[in-house]
Every structure is written in structure tokens, then in C-alpha cells.
Image (spheres, rainbow, N blue to C red):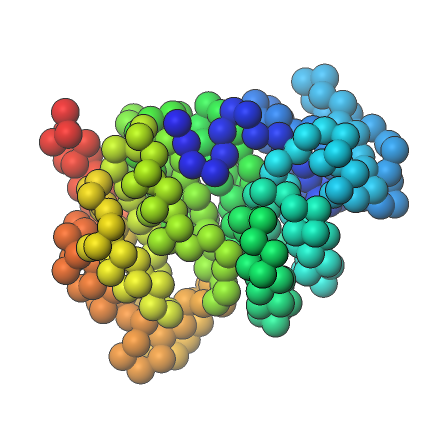
Amino acid sequence: MAIFLDDSSKVIVQGMTGSEGMKHTQRMLTSGTQVVGGVNPRKAGQQVEFEGGASVPVFGSVAEAMEATGANVSVVFVPPKFAKDAVIEAVDAQIPLLVVITEGIAVRDTAEFWAYARDKGTTRIVGPNCPGLISPGKSNAGIIPADIAGPGRIGLVSKSGTLTYQMMYELREIGFSTAVGIGGDPIIGTTHIDCLQAFQDDPETDAIVMIGEIGGDAEERAAAYIKEHVTKPVVGYVAGFTAPEGKTMGHAGAIVSGSSGTAAAKKEALEAAGVKVGKTPSETAELMRQVIASLG
């Protein structure tokens, strides 16, 4: 099985006809994803041809695309200043899963569309500023390269896109049920806890890798959730042990203020919850290999 995304998922792409949208739609199609439409009001009615023979229709709105294709996933590749409107349009259309790849969205815009989606209660948002998610061999919604690792029984949730790719590569011989890049902005939709709960409930996920980073208290809250609700083994990694205090490191949410949000504090909280935490991604992968070996 998988979480959030499987071989029955039908994907549309908001911003498909832009350069990034075209490039990654091609990659999604090549990996076997059912991409059933694009959305661009200025190009509605057109067909876009992709390598491999796929011809994907363009619709004027998310609602039109869903009605015509039965789509249940949308991936957003629109520029930051248009992202809020794109998300609200998708939420109004009640798309079940919305993957917001766009980075550089104003925090105020994210706060507004996140609250709007929460109040509506029909759409799960992954992101923004994320690589999306992949259930290898089934479907790929976003920009995660599909050839890093195949299907398996590890679940992965990560704030970092590049560390998602690295961990998938490190554990490619075991494989993944689903890998979810949740994004590193201060406000995101789907959280570590959401993914931990879904992996805990997935009968074909045996163990979980959780990747966090400095800033905020998401990892500490995840640790508390693991202690109370997760019975499957969890291995963790926290990026940013050498980050200087008060300096933003890559992600907008990865900033340490005073003693809060440090990698050391997060590692301590996770270990107190029974999570084995590696000092490097490679060490973390080795810890997971040991866990899988112990499970037989």
C-alpha cells in the first residue's frame, strides 16, 4: 500500500504549460503517473503533447478538470504571487490532495490559504516549498526523481527535498511505501505528525524515517506523538547541528532563536521517545537497515 497517493491517483497540474510545469509533468508521466490534465485559463481547450505519446488536455479551471477527468490530486507549479489564488481555486473545487511545489510564497498568503483549506475540511495540502510525494512504482506527484528507489516497506517524511532524495538513495536496496517531502516553510499543510499517523495505519509500511531540521518545534511535537501513538520503529535525522544561532539556513523556517529549535534539543526529544537518531544521513540509513534486519 501507500499513503495519500497510489496507482489509482489521477493527477492534474496547475501551471502545466509553464517551463517547470512542462518539465516535471513529463517526468511524472515517464514514471507512470496518471496525469490526466493541466489547468491554464488562457490555454483551455488545447492539447499538450509529451514524449512517449501522451496527449494531455488543458482546462480552464480545476473544477472543470475534475469534472472531465475524475482527478483527485493537483500539483501546483504556478509563480509565488499567483499561488494563493491557485490553492483557493483547488480547495473550492474540493480536490482531495493538493501538492504545492512553489517556493517563495509570502507567509501571509500561505497562512490565508492554509486557514481557508482547514475551514473547508476537504483538501489535504502538502507543502508549499516542497518536492511533493512519491509512492514508488505507483504514482509520483511533484519533483522527486522516480528512479532513486523502488517500492518497499519504509515510510519517509522529510522537511528537506534534497535529504529526501539522499535518504531514498541510501536505502534504495530496501525501498519505500511512500516518501513525503512536507516542505520547510514556517507554515505548511501536512505535518510530520500527519504522515506518522498515516504510516502507522498503513499495513504495508514496516518502519519510518523522519527527517527534520532546526527551527520551530515540529520535531518535538512529533516526538511526543510518537511516544503516545506510534508502535512501528522510527529512525530520525535532524539537519543543522552546525548552524549558527539567529541565521536562516536555506528554508524560511530553519532559524534558531535562543535555545529553542536547536538540532540538539530536537535530537534529545526524539531519543526520549525511543527514536534512534543518526548524526549524518548515512548513519541514519544504517540505523534503518539494522531496524529492517531485526524485523526479519
